[in-house]
Amino acid sequence: MKKIIPCLFTSLFVLPTLLCAADNNNVPASASADTNQITTFPEITITATRIATAPANSSSSATVISREEIARSQQSFVADILRGEPGVDVATTGQPGSQMGVFLRGANSDGTLVLLDGIPINNAFNNAFDFSTLPVNNIERIEILRGPQSTLYGSEALGGVINIVTKTGGGPPTGSVQVEYGSFNSLLTRGTFSASEGKFSLSGDGSFHSTDNDRINSAYQGINFSGHLGYKINDWLKASLLTTYLKSKDGSPNDIYTDDPNDKLKNENYLIGLTLEAAPFDWWNSKITVSHSHERGVFDEPAPNPPYFFDDYSSTTIADRNRVDFQNIFTPTEQLKILIGGTYQDDSANYHDNYSALDRTVDTRSAYAQYDYLPCSRVTLTAGGRVDDSSAFGTHGTYQFGGRFTAPRTETIFRANIGTGFLAPSIDDLYYPGYSNPNLKPEESLGWDIGFEQPLLDGKFHFGSTFFHNHYDNLIQFSGVTFAPENIGRARTLGLENFVSWTPFTNFTVRAAYTWLDAKDLDTDQPLVRRSRNGGSLDLDWKICPRLEATARASFTGSRTDNNYDNYSQPPVVSMGGYTKVDLGLNCRVTKNFSVYGRVENLLNDHYQEAYGFPALIRFFAAGVTGRF
Image (cartoon, rainbow, N blue to C red; front, top):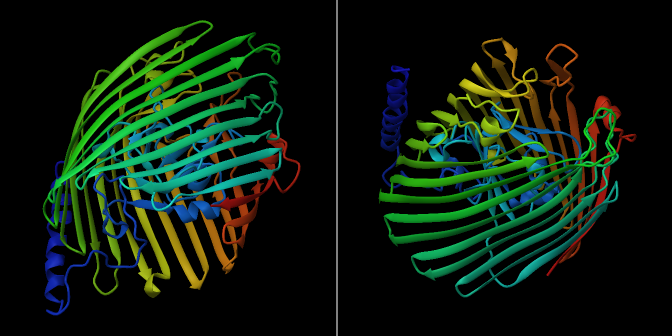
C-alpha cells in the first residue's frame, strides 16, 4: 500500500497534466483550448460531490436520473426507479409498502448513504434507509455516486451515495393534480404546486397512496408532504427551507406459511433543514445547513396469533438526528477549487418493547477537505481527506484520489478513483436487547475503480464500462446462527458496471445496463448473502407523436443467497431464485393541460408467484389522469 499511493498520485496528477499540455500544443491558435464541455450531455450538475460538477467533467463514477425520466417511468417509489441501474441492487421483503434496501457495489444496505438535498436521512437507530417510505414526490433528479464516499460524508457512505434533489419553485404559479386507480384496490392521489414572487420561491408536493396488496393483512397506506421554500436575501446571500413529512401503515403477514392477520407496522417521520448560502466574493462560496430528522416506528402484534407465536406484543423505536454542516468552496483561479468544511452530528435512539428498553446517544465531529483541479477542459484531478471523531468508535481517517481524462479526437472519457471508507456499528448493532454485539468494530474498506465512456454519432450512441474492486475488513454481517451482527474478518466485492444508450431515430431511445458482481467472504470462501451476481435493465422510450408516448422497462435480478432463519435445518443459508420485473406504460396528452396514462407491471418468476399467491401473469394494472394548471 505504501507504494500504491505514490504511484497512483503520479499517474492521476502528473501524467494527465502532461497529456493536457500536449493536447493544448495541437490546438490551433484561433481555436479555444478550454471549453466547459467536450461532448454532448444534459445540462445538469452533480451536487453529491459537494463541488457541483458537470457529468462530463466529473472524476466520480456517477449516474444522474432526470425529472423527465422519473415522470416517464410512472413509478410511485424511488426504489423502483433505481432498479437495474449500474451497480445498484434493490432488495425487498415483499409487496408495495414492504421494507426495501439498496445495495451499492455489494456493500451492506446500511452502507448506502441517502441524502435529500445533501442532508443525510438514514435512520439514526440502524444506519439504514427504508426506501419503501420514499415516494417520487417533488424530485428534480436523483444522483447515484458509486464507490467509497466517506471522505465527503463519513460513515454510512461505504458503498456510495444516493442524493435526491428536490424541485425549486420558479415562474408564475403552476401545479398539477393526479389520480390513479389500479389492481388490488390501489389508489394514488397527488398534488403539486410551484411559484415564485420577487425574492421568494416555493415548491410543494403531497400524495396519498393506498393498496390492499394480494396477501391477507398486507394492505399499505401512506401520506406524504414535502416542500421547498427559498428566499434571496440579497445578491450574495440566500436561504432555503426544506421540509418533509411521511406517515404510513402497512400490514405484516409474516412469512408465506403463517399469514398472521393482525400485525401492523406504523411509521412517522419528518425532516426540517435550513440552509444559508453566501457568495460574498467571486472566489468564495459558503454554506451552512442545520437539520433535524425524526423517525418513529411502531410494531403491534396483538392476539390472536398463528401457533407458536407471542401473545400481545408491541415495540416502539424513536430515532432523532441533529446535524450542522458548514462548508466553504474557495476558487482562487478558474481551474482550481478547494473545499474545506466540518460537521457536527448528534444521533439518539430510544427503544422499548414488552420486555426491554434502551436509550443511547452518539456524537460525531468531522472535518473534511477536497482539492479539485482542472488544468484544462480535458482533465479533472481530485484529492480529499477527512477525519471523524465519534463517542462510539473513536477517531477515524479516510482519503480519496480521482482523475478524469477526455481523449482528443475520439472524445473517450477515462476515469479512475481510489479511496477508503468506513461504517460505524449502529446503535441497533451495539445495544439492541438480546440481539446485539457490543464488541463490534467499524467496517473499513479500500476501493478503487477504473472505467470509460464513449459517445458516438454526435451523442446518439453512448456506452461505457467500469471495473471496481473493494476490500473490506471487519464487515458487519448478521448471523443466522447467533442471531446477532458479527464482524467478518475479510471480504471483497468486485465487478463490472456496463451501460449503453442509443437513439436510432428521432423520438426513440434504447437504454440498457448490466452489472456483474462477485461478493465473497474471504475467510470462508462463501458468497456474501443478499447480493445478486447478475442484474440489469432494458428501457425503451418511444414518443409516437407529440401527444402519445410509450415506455417499456425490464429489470432483472439474479439469484442470491440469504440467511436461513430456521434453527432446525441446514445449511445456514438458503438460495433464492432470480426474477424479472416488466413495466409497460402509455401516456396520452389529450389537451395541453390534461393527460391520461396506464401501466402494467409483471413479475416473471413462477416461484415468486407461487409463494406470494399471484394467480395471473399481469400482476398489477393501473390507470390515471393528470391535470395541470
